[in-house]
Every structure is written in structure tokens, then in C-alpha cells.
Length: 303
Length: 165
Image (cartoon, rainbow over all chains, first blue to last red):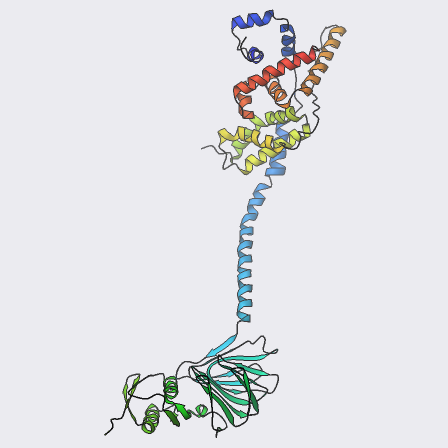
């Protein structure tokens, strides 16, 4: 007998010889009976149409609705993303500091939230947080600016070189490369430079050149001279004077055979370039040439 | 090209296969309710994936889904199959004969319940649904020879149980 002959017999795949042999066996009658009775077995009733109706109405019937919702979901997703972006950027922008900057040959006035005023000289910038203004009056300064501070809480001007804190006053801060000067015109300011705090009463100034604190004379005016379109210097190295000239007129200044460490005392106009050049060159015994936006100072030939 | 997503194609697949899917799960676990659920689940899955399933693969897809559905669930349950008794046509058979028949069917039911799940499923798919061994092999995902083995063992065990060996 071959393997699984009972299965083969049931499916009618036995050879005649095998079938004959199987029929002779004692169990054959039992298997024959099993075959007959089992062919009359029935599974539980299953109503195909009812099941299909149930399927299409209850389960699949919902499917188109789900699909119809999808574009809306997509829209929601996009809308949510946009909302997050808008909210995020609003939050980001609102926490950004306000900042005002001037280009060369430009001046600007800034009115702070408490009506304090800042006048920005050429090539300078200030930034402050409008949101936090009520908590702390803090202004970051690059370059030079004149401050009229309304009375109130501590007002701080932070620069890379030093910090100026005041309560309510008028003062000028100049913070240029290697040059730091604070002049107080009214009230009292406190200058912190290199960790040392200096009290500056009205009518005095503090100056540091290349980290060295210098003696200065008292200002004679009630506000910085640049407010009146003049730049005044008292024993200031020529290089800083020329830098200021560049800023006021947005020109490029070059020198030839000139000692830029010479100290310069004087004033130049911020509105009349020729006058300004004369004001600088004459006391320093220099000549100058103008070529477009370039100015060349050169040493006067010694006779 | 025929697509399962088309309602016509889908309902013809349903009409051709739902009864067998129902029976298949019923034979396995002897639970009518779960067999009904299996039919619904399997065809919902087919509908959801109608774009991915080719019409000729739909059949084996259905059995795979139905099978996986209860893979871990019913193994522990005790199987209690109840087969609708063949309603004997009004006959002139003697009461003794009818009683004997009834007893035999009782024995068969009990023996079927005691069969291993895969032997019972194979046996009943063949006897009730008239499925060829090759078809059962496709449904179960095994070779025809394995199905023949199950059938052989099912017959052998049933006879031994019924004859009280």
C-alpha cells in the first residue's frame, strides 16, 4: 500500500489493484461507512447575501466617508503646520530685539519706549528689547550715540568695551575700535571699564584709547559737538580723527608719510568736506588730494 | 483589467469565497461567531487593500487574513463543534436503524472534536465543501502531500475512535 492510501482512496486515486487489496481488509467497511456518513455532514448556515449586505453597509459603507475626510485632514495638517509657523515666527520676531543702525554719513534718532532719546552718530547701531523694557532698560551700542535718558529705573548702555549705567541724564557714548569715550552732560553716570567703575558727574568725560584710560578735559558744550554737525577732538590720535572723517562723509581716507599717532586737537565740519579737510590738514601740516570718494593725506614737503 | 476595487469584482469574490472562509474558520475553532467575524474582517482587509491585491491572489489573501486573525486567540479554547445533522428523509427505516445512525453520528461528532485542528479542517473541507486536496493545500499554505497526510491520519483516527479501538 502506498503512503497515505486512505487519502488516495477517498479521492479515488488508488490503483485498481490497491483498491481491491484495501477492500479485502477488515477495516474497509468502517471506512466506507465513515465516507458515506461524513459526506452528509453540514456546516452551520451561512447566509452569503446577508453577510455581504452587512459587510458593504456596516464596514465598507463607511469607507467612502473616510476617504472623503482625507482631503480635509490633509488641509488640517497643512493648516496646523502653517499655524505653527506663524505662531513660531511671531514669537521669534516679538522676542527679537529692536535695532536701529546708521550707515556712514547718516544720523538717526531713536525714541525708546519710556521716551528716552538716542541720537545715533554715523556708522553706529543700537539694539534693545521692547518687550523687556519695563523690566530693564538695556541698550547695546556699537559706535557713537548721545543719550537723553528719562528718569526712571537703571538705564544701561552695554558696549563691547565698557558699560554705562545711569538713572536719568544726558550723555554721549563713543565706542569705536580701540576707542571708548563717555561724556556726561547732565546728572551722573557710572562707567564700568575693565571692571573698574568710575562715577562721572555732569560736565566730565571718560576716555580710553586702546584700553588705556586717558585724561580728558571737561566738555564745554551742553551736548556733543557732532549734534551740531561738528566733530571735535582734543588730543586724539590722528588715526581716530581720520576714521571719524570717513564715517561722517562716507569716504575712504588714505595717508602717505603721515604719523597717525600724532595727537590732534580741533574741530571739523560734518557738512562741508573741503572745510573739514582743511581743518584737519592745516594744523597737522599735511596736504590732501581728493579723487572721487578717496582722500589722500600726505606730508607737506619740508623745505 | 479586473480590479478588486471594482464593486462587481469584489462582490463576486465575496459570493464565491465567503462561505468557505466561514467554514474554514468554523472547522478550525468550532465557533460560529468568530467565523462570522473572520469573514467580515478578511473581506474588509481585502477591500482596504484592493488596489494591492490581484484578483487571482484574493482567495489566498482571504485565508491568510482569516487565519492570522485568530492565530493567537483561540488556541486555548476547547473546541465544541456542532454539525447540523443531515435531516434524514422520511424513510421506512426501522427505529433500530435510525437509533444506530444517531449513535454513529454522535460518535463521529465527538471524534471530530478530538481531532487535531489541522486534520479536522482538512477532513471537513473535503467532506463538506468538496475541496480538492490541492485547494486545501493552497488555503493552508502547505504542500498537497502534507494535506494527504493529514487526511490519511484524520480517517485513521476517526475510524479508530468510532470503532472504539
